[in-house]
Image (tube, rainbow, N blue to C red; front, side, top):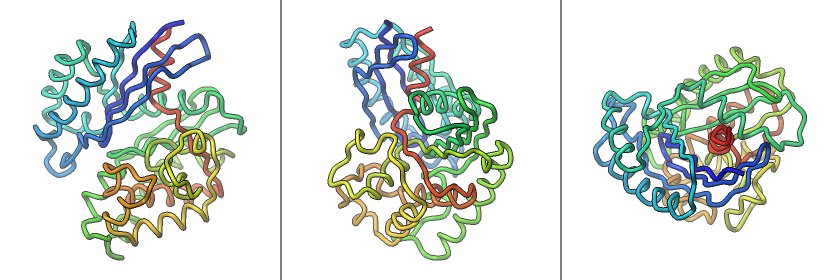
Length: 303
């Protein structure tokens, strides 16, 4: 058995998984998340802001202490959409090396998709082939396969990117929602054709937007990952939750008991992407998974 530390740094959040891995078995030791909004403004400026890099550094300092305390023997950090897009990504890499002692791997969208798929489908009882979508802050990855990846593509539509690009009002206007729908629909149709997603019988959704929508659909009074993981949500429930979120102000979303404070301003755009994925793929049900790219990174470290 190997104790490993996996870190996923995306556009919106940086997450840590410390786990014991033994072959096909992964046991959580510590799993945590900080919303740092690393990709704030990247779509507009093409650069990571000093404030965003500092927020991420602060989170990583805490993670480094946890990794040392738990005695993890292998560390891998994967950085995704914001780090791919930024012209000053070297500043970010230098910061990570200084804090963790390892270089972040700025992985491609296709690599991100493969790691997410690996983490998502292990232990899934529903039949394959699967269409897995990982709905991030800056991008959404689409993957099809059964036990291994067959096709994968990354599209530049995510909850932060769409909010910054289109959803400026609080709550968003009908025109802003329509502009988002048009861009997301084009991207989703392109992705589904590339991965042949409409023919996969099981749809699996990953990341914070999906699990938060699941918590709202199930009417949970507090966020409970044990009730969300591998739960099924109907298209009608996703439609309802999306409509409710888009009609709310950020303050009203913040009052929802399952809402992470760092997600409230972008969850409307994320839910809209989720709804369009279901509509365009023709799936009536989506399975929410709490296991994703972090688990894929951890499994890879054990070898």
